[in-house]
Structures are given as C-alpha cells and as structure tokens.
Image 1 (tube, protein in one colour):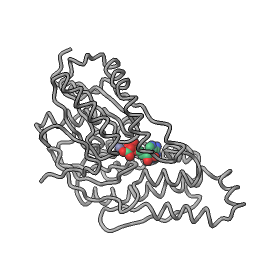
Image 2 (cartoon, rainbow, N blue to C red; image 1 turned 90 degrees about the horizontal axis):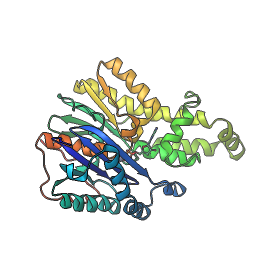
Image 3 (cartoon, rainbow, N blue to C red; image 1 turned 90 degrees about the vertical axis):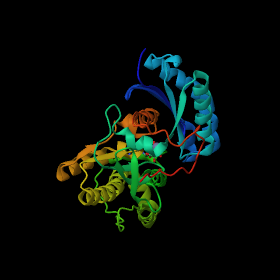
Image 4 (tube, helix red, strand yellow; image 1 turned 180 degrees about the vertical axis):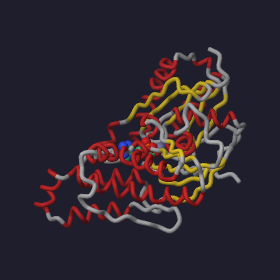
Amino acid sequence: MSNDSLILGIESSCDDTAAAVVANGKVLSSEISSQQMHSRFGGVVPELASRAHQRRIVPVVRTALRKADVAPSDLTAVAVTRGPGLAGSLLVGLGFARAYAFGLGVQVVGINHLEGHICSASIGRSLPTHPWLCLIVSGGHTQLVFVEQGLSFRILGTTRDDAAGEAFDKVARLLDIGYPGGPAIDRLAAQGDLAFHRFPRARLEGYDFSFSGLKTSVLYYLNGLGEKKRTALMRRRLPDICAAFQEAVVDMLIDVLHRAIGETGVRDVHIVGGVSANARLRQRTEALGETCGVRMHMPPPAYCIDNAAMIAFAAHIRLSIGRTDPPGNPVAEPNLPLATFA
Ligand code: KG4
Ligand code: ZN
C-alpha cells in the first residue's frame, strides 16, 4: 500500500483504549474499547483504568490495523496522546507507541489530547483556513479557543469550576441514572419537557463558564421537595428534570458562543468533545449557525467522545504543516496545557 502519510493513532488518556489508522487525513479504521467497570464507582478509578489499558492496547491496535487492511510495515508514523490525562493511563499508550514506532523505525508524534479534540470536527477534510472558534466541551474540559492557521491557539474562556460533561455526570449521579451521565440525560431529556422547571444560568464576565451552581441548584431543588414528593417525581418526571437541566447547560454554552462569534467575526466554529454528541446542543448549534451566518462543524458522535482517529488526524495536520514540536520523544504530561503560540 503506498501512501504519503499512514498514521497509527493511540489514545489512552482516561478510560477508553483507542487505536485508529488515518491515511492522508482519511480515517481507515477507528477502534474504541470502553472500560465499563468504572460505572459502579460513579467515576474513573485511575488504577483500574491503567491496568485495563495494558490488557487491551495490543488487541485494540491489532483490530484497528486489520480493519484498515494495513500492515505495520506500511505505517509512516505513530501518533499518541501525551497529555492531559491520568498519568498511569497516558504511560501505557506512550510506552506502547514509543516501542512500536522504534521497532518499525518510524517517528512517534506526541499529541495534546485537546488539540486532537479541536481537530476532530474536520476529520477527513482540512481545517478552516481563517481564524475560527472551537468550543471544547468534555468531561474534563470546557474551553473556548480562538484558533489561527498553523494550529496557534488563544484560550478565550474556560470553566471556573466543573466542566460541562462533569456537570452532566454529577447530576446523573444525583438522579441515580448511571455513569457516564451525559448520554443517559440526553436520552431521557428527549422525552422531557424542558420548561418543567427553570434552573439558574450563570453568566460571567468575558467568555468564562461556571456549572457548579447549576449542579447545586438541582441538588437543592430535589432536597427541597421532601422525600415523598421527590420519590414520586423521580419516578414520573425524570425526563422533565433531565430536559430542564440540559437546557440550562445548553443555554450557557450557546450564550457564550453567540457573543464570541459576534465579537471575533469568525466564519467557522467547531464544537467538540464528549458533550458535543448531545442532541439538544447539536440542534441549538445548528440554529445559532443560521442566526449568525457562520459554518458550524461538529464531529459525528463517534469522534465526539475520546477516540484515536482525532489523535492520528491531528498528527497528520501537524506533519503536513511542518510542526514537529516539542523535539524528542514524547513523555506523559498529565497536566499538559493547550500550547499557545504567538
Ligand atoms: O471527550 P470525552 O469522551 O472525554 C473527556 O475528554 O472528558 O467526554 C466525556 C464526557 C462525559 O462527561 C460524558 O458524560 C459527556 O462527555 N457526554 C455527553 C454526551 N455523551 C458524552 N454529555 C451530554 N450529552 C451526551 N450525549
Ligand atoms: Zn476527551
């Protein structure tokens, strides 16, 4: 098989073991092995996550290569998430990627997980050529980023407390509907009445976000009902509570985005990360795009959640613009910020 760029991507920053093959920016395969064992703890247990990555990484990579119909010797590079993420989880992916690339005699490209998400809405195409906005909404991050050509980032806003996905997960735990909470709330809210209750929306200066007050107001609302009423409500009106909570999160995200589009004058917007799979957010995003006359790009659901296609694709973009920083072999950087370049 002859390709200018044939990249194996590896992602293991949290609780998904993922591998993908991307040829000249096009995804040939994308495998994700999600670790269900964390659901009974209501959150990711780091020690269990890294052990599961160790067991799964080889079969997941094998499957990705097989489905792509690619021989390891055809690969031109191995891309791997170097941070941010759980140290033990990152180390498994990095250790594997470095050894595998060394064995094949190809380069290993360390990718910032957030850069992977930022690129994910353009997978299979090219990134916008003019400055654009990217809203990252995941379990660990909520950031509004101004992106210029050459993958130069300026963070315009960030969450002051919980990330948007974290708010979904915490409220789902209050409602006892499982982990991760986002998909469960999304499903229930589809049958609910979003006007059932108006939870408060935080509106901060600039482009920052805050979700912990909303989570607390759901808690106070439920506690304020008293046991009997609460039990009855949880049985009959769960979809309504989910829809009302979800609408508050979506309102806050859309409000910041609307202002930022107006003030920056961008023509393209990416919305990425696990929460961008949310059906109501996607609907409201499309509507905002029409109102503002901008192109809204959201990844298909398979590339919203953590995946390795976005890591391999980000490496493809980096290599195609000659960005090989930082020099040397990548190491695990659990608190890696989104690098900003002037
Ligand atoms: O990007 P991601 O897979 O992992 C991180 O990098 O954090 O995001 C996971 C987060 C979880 O908090 C999950 O509840 C949320 O994304 N999520 C959703 C949906 N699907 C996943 N939140 C709302 N609606 C969804 N459909
Ligand atoms: Zn992520």
